Image 1 (cartoon, rainbow, N blue to C red):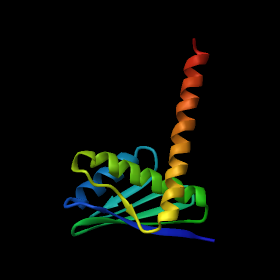
Image 2 (tube, one colour):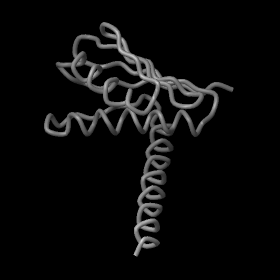
Image 3 (cartoon, rainbow, N blue to C red):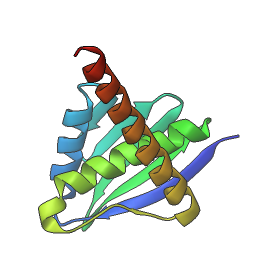
Image 4 (spheres, one colour):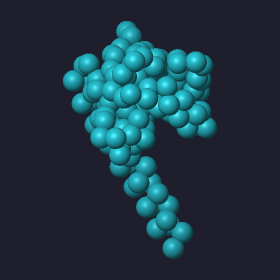
Length: 124
C-alpha cells in the first residue's frame, strides 16, 4: 500500500529554497533540481517539490511508512532550518502523519546522538 501526503512551505522565495535543498541533499541522497521542480528519493519514498508563487509545494509518497516518515522529516527539518531567520516552517496536510514523521525524526536524531556518544566513549 502506498502512503502519501502533501504539504507546503510558505515563502516568497520558493525557487531559492528548492535549489538550496536539492543541492544540499544531493550530497547524500538522490536529489535532482530542474527549473522550478525538484525530486528527492529516500528508500521507497519520493518527495516531489514544485516552486509556486508564494510557496514550495511538496508531495510525498512511498511504499514503506518508515521511508515516508524519514523523507518528510528530512525535507521539513532542512527547509525549516534554512528559513529559521524568516520564521516560516513546513506545513503538512495530514496532521497524524506529520506527528508520526516528527516522532520518527526525533528518534532517529536521538539514536544517532547516542551512537556518536558511545563511539566517543569507546575511544577514551
